[in-house]
Length: 323
Image (cartoon, rainbow, N blue to C red; front, top):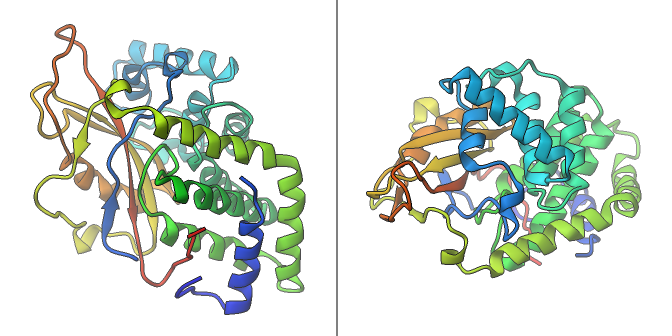
């Protein structure tokens, strides 16, 4: 633990629970975008459908078809599709797409379905923690937050990150754990946190192990075999403007559509924002500055896509996830 905003004893209790699971900060720090799915990505709705689902300017028939595809895939056990539905219903009309009203029960249903399914992005764990904070279920929020930190620790050794990413999430992780902890009753909460996560681990340990294993499988697939756009940061550093910068750690997940000619993306679509779009929308400008390599599409309409997670780190909040 380094530079935590809570006391050393509390931090130790939280981290000890995190470490029991088997299986520094700068301004906006995006990772290299990576494939949003593993070798079985054909089971998911297309990237075009995902873009339509999350864009306000998508034609209504196209959006309706995208929603149908996503629901069908999620009901058949596709974790990535369930995650997208959970994010959509958790954010509701705060999402730029304004596709659905916020419904925490529906969001919880899809996000928990994601956790139970293969190919569930680990970011779903943080989404569930934020959802339960909003629902006032703070014990459950803490359990999901610890699960997120635990899986992050496992992925740290692989050099991979949730949502199939490679960014450093320690600042947001610390911020999430702190908020969950402070909502709990003060009486005996350190012991209660460890006991609650032990119980959670007994119920959900297999899913957490599977998430880490799935990320390892994705990491093992050579980049050029994943058939996705290859993005990299532009040559110049473009920090988030101070006037638009979130006041605390935040994470956003974007879908980038690559131009066949290379360069900056043709489209940038917000998928998930933590804690909420209010904090994370400032990252859109950062996402638009990423550049892709040229590629040769098979047809004139074909496009390649990549997921880009971005985090705003804050030196006031930090937790060391090094194994």
